[in-house]
Image (tube, rainbow, N blue to C red; front, side, top):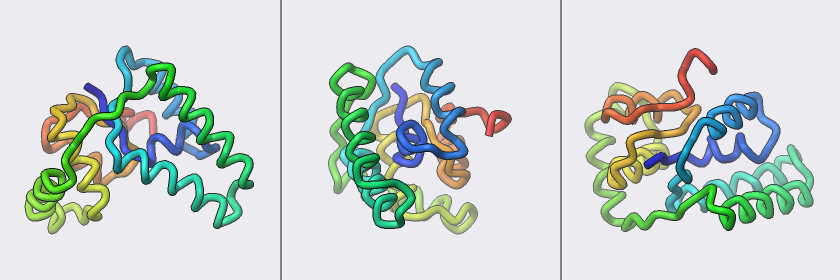
Length: 148
């Protein structure tokens, strides 16, 4: 199972410096990307925040969300259920273990906690701190750092 964080998803739908690598990475996958309620919520909020900061026009956010929804319907993504309380407990455990050394943020820990609870073997992220924690947990982290 492959999980992604919201930042990776944003790179697939908005023009980012990481977009070419994100698209290339997704092109190598043979299974749908598993998403949680948190990933979907953060992705949608990131689109709206890009409107607020005037990085994109409102119609670009609508188009990106429509494309995401179409990709979801076509099977590119699969929503996985992770209980909020269970994810919170796992994130707290990860926080105690990694934050003093890596400096991870709470929502980043939540994404990695969800991937861990879902027994994902692959984690898609451009966030260095998330990548460190996921790697320490034994997840295959993509894209490879040499491609960043």
